[in-house]
Length: 79
Image 1 (cartoon, one colour):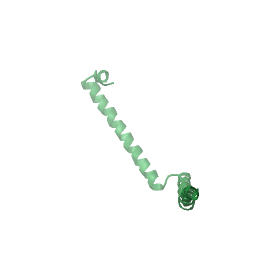
Image 2 (tube, rainbow, N blue to C red; image 1 turned 180 degrees about the vertical axis):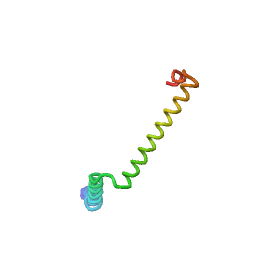
Image 3 (cartoon, one colour; image 1 turned 135 degrees about the horizontal axis):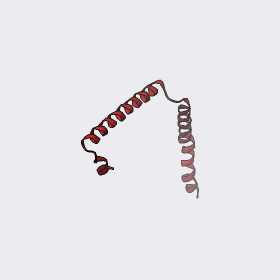
Image 4 (cartoon, rainbow, N blue to C red; image 1 turned 60 degrees about the vertical axis):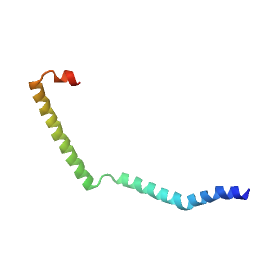
């Protein structure tokens, strides 16, 4: 009977002493980082990505215009 109790209590003690504190620390740290928002570097990267997306959208519009001029029925075949 004591062996069974020891098999149950030992992992609980180890969890309480080692895993739980680390888990709580990492959880609260990540929540704090989320509340702080984006860093300046991340904001800069977001602006760059937005500019690239705008350029790509313009290129797609240009390609669609070319395809419309050269092959008017291309949309029917590919949509």
